[in-house]
Length: 98
Image 1 (cartoon, rainbow, N blue to C red):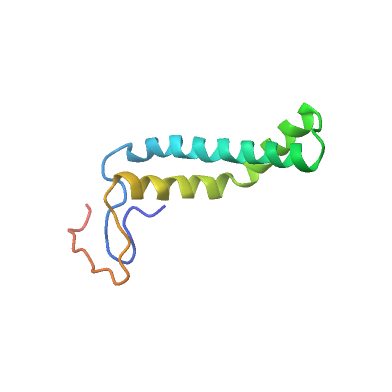
Image 2 (tube, rainbow, N blue to C red):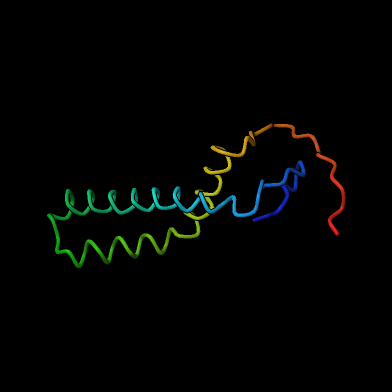
């Protein structure tokens, strides 16, 4: 993830460790994936064995992990950082980092 927005120059991480809270959002998304998987397997595949539930849920979580990680950070940024989408962003001038 970029340190600064390439379009407007806004710094994404407000303080050190800011995105640690995004792990809770990621956990909630993972729980949603597991519950959705369980509902689909139960309703459409006639309640398969526990091994099928676990292996399909783990497989889906591994496949969606990169997407889940990024979406969790985006949700966390929108919830807690005050950054909002602007259609025509203005460039923030900042001093060079040494």
